[in-house]
Each structure stands twice: as C-alpha cells, then as structure tokens.
Image 1 (cartoon, rainbow, N blue to C red):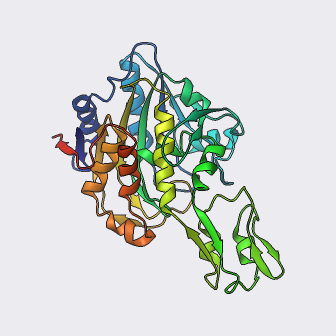
Image 2 (image 1 turned 45 degrees about the horizontal axis):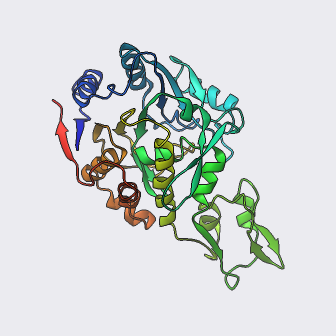
Length: 341
C-alpha cells in the first residue's frame, strides 16, 4: 500500500505541492456529492504555536467542496481542564487560532454528552465515540505528527482514537494504564495533590492514596513526586487502547470513506494538547497522504528518527501501529513511499 509524500521544502510553494499530493493520492475520492464530511483536526491548545497551519486546512476544505461534499471542521472536548474543555471555549480557541473559514462543530457536544457506545476489538470491548463523527458520511483525518509522553508519538491513530471519542472514551483508554504508589518511599508531602488539576490523590495516614475513578493516568503527579514513589505501570496498554478505539471509530464509516493527511512539521517533544509542547526534537519532514491510518503512521516512523521518542518515554512508537494492523486493518508496517515532485 503506497503512501504519497511531499518533502517540507520552503523554497517551493507548499500549497501547490500539497495540491499535487492530494491528486496523486486520491485523497478526496472518499467524498461523494452531498456527503457531510468531517475534517478531523486539532485546532491547537491556546498558546501552543505548533499545529497544522490553517491555510493548509482551508485548502482541504476547498477540495472537499470541489468534490461535492459539505465539509465541517471538528474535534472533541478535552478530559483535562484546558481551553478546549467545553464546546464554547473550544470554539473560541478554534477561532483565535485561525480556523474560522468553515463551520466548526464540536463533535461530542457542549460538555461531551453527545456520544455513541460502539463495540470494538482488542484491549477494549467498547468505546464512546462522538456523535457528530458517527453521523458523518466521510472523514478526512488531518494530523500533526509529534511526540507523546505515554505513547511515544501521536499521529493519525491517536488523532482518531482520542480526538474522535468523548471524555468518557478518552478516560477509558487512559485507564488501561496502571498507577502505583510505593508507601515505603512516600513521605505524604502532598505535592502530587497540588499539581493534579483535579486534586485526586488524597493524603491518608501521612501517605498518598489515589483510588479515584476519575484519574486519567497522566504523568504529572509521577513527575512531581520528589521521592519517586509514584510510577505508571503497563504504559504500553495505552498504545494498544489507541488502536482499539481507532478500530471502533472507523467501524462507524463505510469502507473507503476515510482519508488521511499527516503533517510531519514542528515535531515537538509533546502533543498539541497543552500550551507548552516542549522543544522541537527533529527537523521538518513533509506531508503524507494515504487511505490507511496504519500506513500513514508507519510512513512517518519510517522517515523519522522515532527512537528519540522511544528512549525518552520508554515505549515503542510502533506498538499502536502494529496493534491496529493486528486488529485487521489494511495498511503496511513498511509502506512504499511515493515522492511527489
């Protein structure tokens, strides 16, 4: 399965280059006249400078219209408490960050209440998918490839798994990771509770305890603990959960109704979800287009020095890609990459 690719070459008109890329890859073949087309993107957390630039997304919107579709920009609300936690704040952030040229529909509703439970395969039995995603006729998945502290990297698979699910679905995926507190190391200082935005750890008997079902297993408390008493267990489970959730989301679409465009540019330590994405860890690579989430992410990993992420986060970036392939999705772990001049 071929992945089409244009290098990030700023001596050229990149809009013309991506236009040729989409034509070569057949990116908009999934769109039929009258289709309601979800353009799944990440508008960027307020203050984060690294996300797919709006003019590239505007081009995709225009291409969908030319194919006879009715495009809408979409993403889901965050579980954690940032500027995209509800639909009002999320929409305002989208406008501030430049995504005001097409309808922006928060796929899971005002407070992440608009969901459909979908049966899936793998480490999860079911997943809560956002209602507007389920109701869409086709989808263009526009992703920004970058690092991620728990899964190594985030690309098309993560964009679908987390970005197309409600807060309950996000929490379900994160809860596949375990959190352990070593009482022999814990001093009961309470710093873990202070840094947790939900204030979940409790100090009981001068020891930290976190049994809350609301804990999403983010690494904040672990990183703040001065004695190293807190650890995350089975981190690779989250990568498997991404694949499982992606399977559920994509099962709501007819075959050949989803296309993928991934931008490997401004490749940072961390994801787009917080104001501080960290430093850039590798040079700009280019733009990938595919009809497979497996192949799109595998192509990025093939061209990137992703071992930087593996070593930094002690995970294997390929886990999520291999897992989705093992669940039966088309795609290649070592895809042919066709360069578009």
